[in-house]
Image 1 (tube, helix red, strand yellow):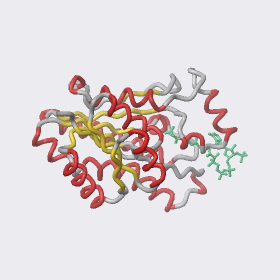
Image 2 (tube, rainbow, N blue to C red):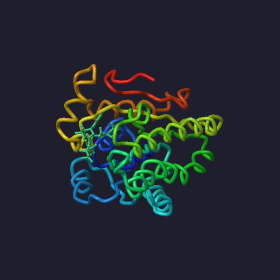
Image 3 (tube, helix red, strand yellow):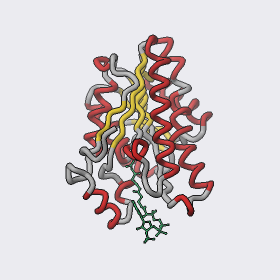
Image 4 (tube, rainbow, N blue to C red):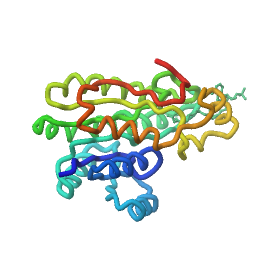
Length: 240
Ligand code: CAA
């Protein structure tokens, strides 16, 4: 029987590529999304992947959503905590609301997503947790005090979960994408984006599929000894 994978933010951007790649690799995939019904419908029409609507910022909704996915598809063995948002502003202009929205989704959202699944993974003695962090959690970024803090925090979650899950057959790993050609990066003002691309030795933005392929490997049974690691996929823009 195919293992079941849940991908949060799985209908757009990097998440959509991850959902599709996991399906192509033989997993049964559930793609969560928070708000864009049109994009979710289009995604299901194109891929046949079932979508589920809830906000990762809401613990009870995550718990209920995961239960629904498990009722429909079976126990979730792989979870990809990918959902993330930006509310960029220079620190002197950043509002508490911009801080809290990003923390609630990008950091607390990872707790909310993984926590309801953890007991089942422990019982079944198998689990794969993959968290999509960011190059900006590694190096910081102008106008992203909120986002960089959450993405750095995600690495702390992964390194701690790895230690807790290791003996129960659960791995937790992070991927830090650099700048990838998605709506999120395209929303950056063009001039700023051009200056960012100039800093990428590869001379281009990454493709969502280049991140998805990393996830497929980390989700596989074969990756069991890779635990607590951070994979940087950024075209040589930054080394830890
Ligand atoms: N480094 C240094 N200075 C920068 C800068 C940078 N990266 N980006 C902007 N600035 C400067 C501007 O040149 C401007 O300087 P001047 O005042 O001297 O002209 C100043 O900072 C911006 O001041 P504003 O008052 O005009 O700023 P604003 O309130 O209009 O905000 C902004 C503009 C939100 C910062 C906008 O420039 C922006 O979106 N920047 C991009 C931030 C970024 O890189 N975000 C990453 C998004 S992609 C992502 O997050 C995915 C991932 O994981 C990699």
